[in-house]
Image (tube, rainbow, N blue to C red):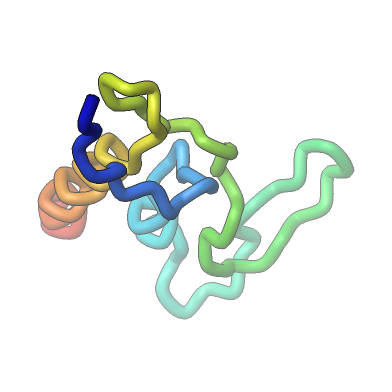
Length: 90
């Protein structure tokens, strides 16, 4: 049996709330607070999304041979890039 090439699989941390959406909720020129650490109540200044609102392998899919793939994460990224234009306009 000949297998097709392995699918692209490079990402392990997937943003449940897309990073580009998170960046849009910082008030321009305002240092924060931006994030609230619900575990200890600490207020964090405005910052990039980093690993916040992310999970390991949240958007992982498998091909027909049960090999992991980034295809869903990549497709969501393309859609989010289009949708953020509407958010910016709003």
